[in-house]
Length: 466
Image 1 (cartoon, helix red, strand yellow):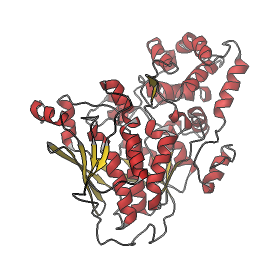
Image 2: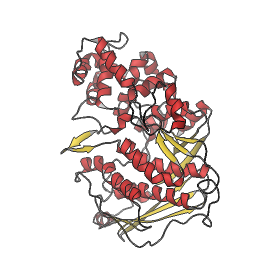
Image 3: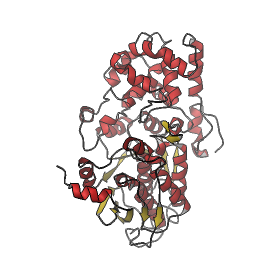
Image 4: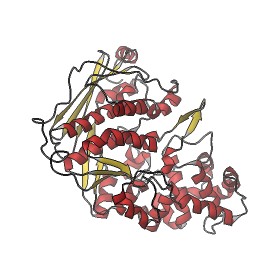
């Protein structure tokens, strides 16, 4: 039995409001406090790699962290009114909260039977407490009014996207939240410093989950982004450069005509909201890979020889639940993320290379046919960080015309269906290759600053409006 009684769980679940109580800064440590009415107070500690300078820039970023991180606890009772007790939100902060606590939780709504859209009843009250900066307020240290911010910080999660950004920006430092062995191996392989953030979730959250509380996906990328922005200020870095592709903006499913996107906090809409909230601090946040598809990123990762440094299987990064993949820090080779990564890399690599990386010949495994089919299924696309439907279908269609892949069981079984899903003649290799070529071309919608444009030009990305 968990440390939470059934009575306490019932009281928490019947709470009338979720409260953002306070956020405090003590050097490099942030303490975010929340409450379910007056029933239960929870708090988490976030330890940054360097102390934050006192002043308005820190207050702005720490407040953003507080608002974003609260979704991990709010989901236990969602939907409920949200009451901010740390001061009035400006229009950008309010818009971010509305997005995170509605769109960011729509997958949770689907899996736990909540209404969609998720109601967001946001209000503020006279502050009980505010941000407490570490020392007297004023423009000391890096940031607006103090020293100039310079350089870039690249959050790395383990996957091909952040690996490509890190490789494209050899002068940038790397940062990760709750590092595991793979993150450290990756940084060592690149010969780069890795700044580590430790996020200590309140252990009562695990107890609530064990007792049967509502649980599910949260917009974790937004939480990591706000934490990374605070770390950037602490380290004197101007830019937080994400590795998020354009494919992340495609909804995973539609439910009663409402879009539900597992990757909403990676979408371009979310990037715009985050930028608006963080910009007053002097820290710039943007995705360097926004113009690119997952297919284009896979091609570039393969070309640069980065595949052996990539690991994005969720099983390898579990918290509070050890798995074989997390123990060994390897791909599990039997989940949607493994299937998608294997599929989009395959057109650019030989089978022995992928066998060595994933530890299994996934495209020749009859038991994986349905899992690969789901990657291009409108009804069954997995709630995971996988690319859009067309990328999966076109990749499968292309493999059917590649000698080294065409005999694989999954490819033989699904090639005709995949081609039909994107209106291709399954016998027309030229059309399949042309469709892949279109996927590899960049799109114009992005926020990459002009001073980073040369990096994209090296990848063949044309200049585009910003």
